[in-house]
Length: 243
Image 1 (cartoon, one colour):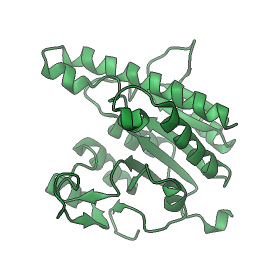
Image 2 (cartoon, rainbow, N blue to C red; image 1 turned 90 degrees about the horizontal axis):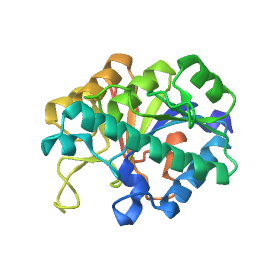
Image 3 (cartoon, rainbow, N blue to C red; image 1 turned 180 degrees about the vertical axis):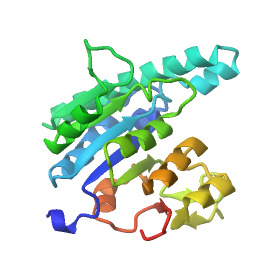
Image 4 (cartoon, rainbow, N blue to C red; image 1 turned 45 degrees about the horizontal axis):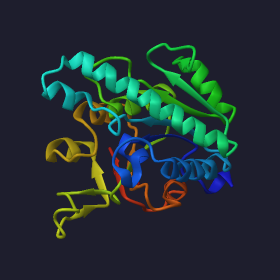
């Protein structure tokens, strides 16, 4: 089974909104269950998987600071929101029999392990799913940047960027029916065209470390498995465009 897989160790980047499902806010147990079931399929194929979860379904630091809150404080609140999402996802994975560890960039040893690179890699080697919570532990950095940083640190072969649309478009396909979808892009394309794949810091990190990013639709069941197998799902972002 391993021979047919394109990626053996990956980071799955989930937005907080993905966990909210159709309700738009908070955590939808049905969506968490669906994501957990898809992750279980991947783990059963001996793929080493780590997850980075956003917190936008509970709190957005940028939105808080825009309304007058101190930016660092607002960002720390956002990091705590990612911990709540990570614990919810861990619970859903446990119900599917998937062994999971949550590692946080902000220490809270009563609920999760602290982030330790070598320990995280050991968990992955043992087939455990590692959920990286609390961002980088620093304000002013997004969870996209966390995904890029952790991918480089644990030597992941790619980042699976889960979205609610089936790839990267030149404009919002939900608002513009004539929006053009890109099958492949370079990091420079993403930066120069201002495409909302990830923020500039994250894109630069991926470019410097040659980490490909695959943007795909999470709501279509089985898509994670298809991306891992190397099927042309969504949009491939890389330096060499050999997707």
